[in-house]
Length: 403
Image (cartoon, rainbow, N blue to C red; front, top):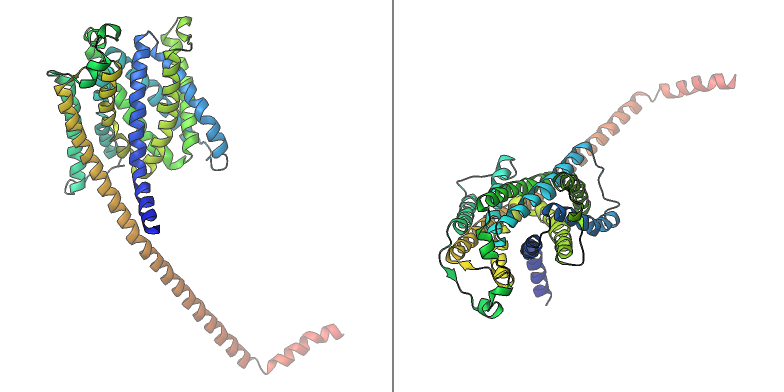
């Protein structure tokens, strides 16, 4: 029983990063659907970003203040600049551009464009020397090929639709589409090119956010505090951007409706929890591992969109999803092999360190023994040489005291 419990425990420890990242993709997928409904109802995406990060700050700050009050590093000027840039890249640039692109397109299309994230992150990580590419190694070849296949699958979904696939549940859930949001007809009138460009910029900012977050976590190791500070900084910056872009006071009004749900859900799940979980996983596995799971969000959104928004799924989307899954598997396989190789190197290096430490201790002890023997020999030689004059010197010392 103990052996089985130990095996299960080890399996769970190894599976935790995968479970965490897959769960986050479900959270992101729900955010895409809810946000699309809110934007279709007229909510400003600038205001949505402000409320989102206000909710995120309120949700994560108490935990950061209480749990990390003793381990929180001091904020230097360099770390402050990094937090400022993180707030600008993530909350402001990435999410405003992404919401604008989502408004012009559809949730499935937006997620498909976001699948360029692993490729962008991989290239940036290589440029920043956070990832090493040895093309002779199979694991590096798997990461490169997997990245290319993932991007190819995303592009196939974007450029090729094909015939619509009638899903079984669509006929039962949406038999009459007159009462459902007409996303297909509305999206056909949107500026898809503009939306695509906005989504590419959003993905580029998102990839940069992951790289800088990984760099910041090397010195500022308090993940909860970093998440709270990034969300708070993003709230302030988003307020400034909203005041510059929106000049109507009515855009700030929010009630007990879908707008409030979208802001609260996105803030608590997709910002505070997501930033924190990504930071923990990133410290162990790196930014490429974290972003490699983003293609799963598109598949989840496609299925959820067919349920909730009556979105159509096309043959091109299914073919692209298959390619994305293969690419994702190749990247994860390469990262897993790299992680196991790193574990083996550390396992080999630890006994060597212990052996070197023991050898140094033995050498130090031998040196100490030699020094002690030399000191004893010197003392004996001095004592042998000073036997005769010793009493004279003693009387000479005591003579003045007697007088």
